[in-house]
Image (cartoon, rainbow, N blue to C red; front, side, top):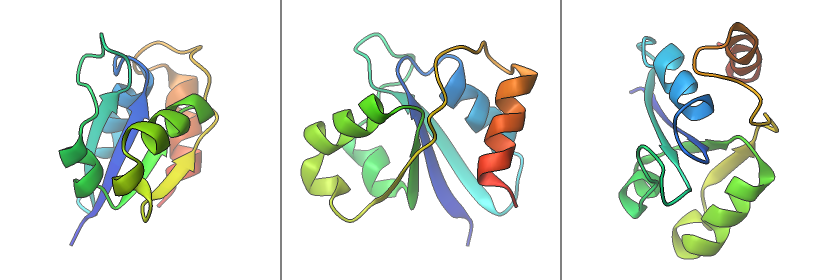
Length: 105
């Protein structure tokens, strides 16, 4: 059964969307992405939090958002802070390399 990974950034346009794009090709992963901002392309919701085995957030502020907004649901979730700043565009080669380093095989 594939591991379910949820990637979160602010607007779900560059960082988390890139992660979803590059990892959704893998058979061992089921991947979604979302954002925390009110103007996010796709905004994170309870269903996504429930669905995910592991939640990867780009910055500490995204983790705080989840822990505050979804405190009951995140209590037993594995949330990983990647510390990837908002310095990249969609599919930036450096961003891809950084994500692949962190997620690995």
